[in-house]
Image (cartoon, rainbow, N blue to C red; front, side):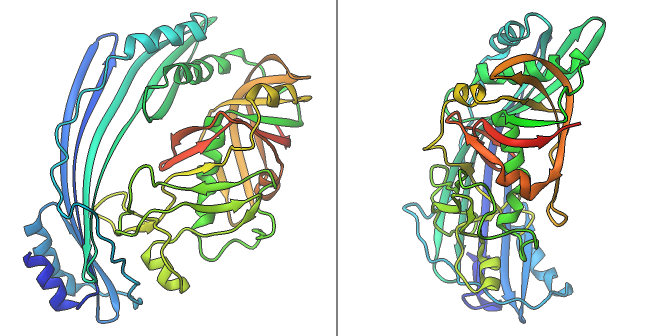
Length: 416
């Protein structure tokens, strides 16, 4: 290949090529009907070390990438050490087209019935957007690595509208499905988000226990996940105990792909073990800076940008969890966060968090009534160490990487 020869001439053995091809089919369904859209994309990227610095170029065609290489010398780059390149090889060293993507099954009517039933007629499904996609990637480098990967995903967005006593509330829920669609869980989330804010009841407690729905727990984990790639760590992070001793966090994308976006083999990484920070997530560049090896977490959100260290599939380990019912029965006086009403906000440097949610008040393990809106805030370090209960009902959500969380119990939180 001409472009590989040019990279070898510029930077012997210290170069990488990446090619991506994808096909996706998006279905938007509503009471007015259904529309389908088919999209395809191709992308090329090159990265190489030349004159002591890292250079990167990208284009939508191989010819465009050749032209981008010719223009790269106009850009000044900061000094950087070349990484320890992987030398992996997959069974297939080509990058076939991803192939046609089947249309999403008809789910609008079934989900609409479930939303109506969950809300007792107070909410209706407005529309449902489902995107199914197939992607093939190939990564090869000057050290001899050559791997190909194929991945498939189904994700989407659902909107519902709640109405009660002349008031209305619109709700939105994103989802990631692996296997059969989880319509029942999605309907419950939509119903709660569309109807609970209509109660007009403020938080009845200034402090108490805090039960988190899996979607809220996943959003919290997604918000703090940069701690596992940040360098240096904030001063408040204590390696001895970052979370409570009940928490073990794992990143393992081996079920999704055998390699990351740089061709490094995927492996299971225990990030937090019984509350203690045990490992960091590295791509090739951050590993070279830290004097270690990549953990297989070089992620490419787009072919247009260089890889960066990110979680790939991070989740709470739940092998020692209890049932959600047991967690609920153990709440003496607190709030259940059923759904977020705003994105989770964290300030990792200042050790602060703020979560706005709608939910249900709980006394002695029993639901007392809806809470239209509440806010929990305080020190992030205290929140993480106060997780006192973990359930077995783990679900995955796009945050934006797949993030898995079960129902969580926090022993104490301050509300307003």
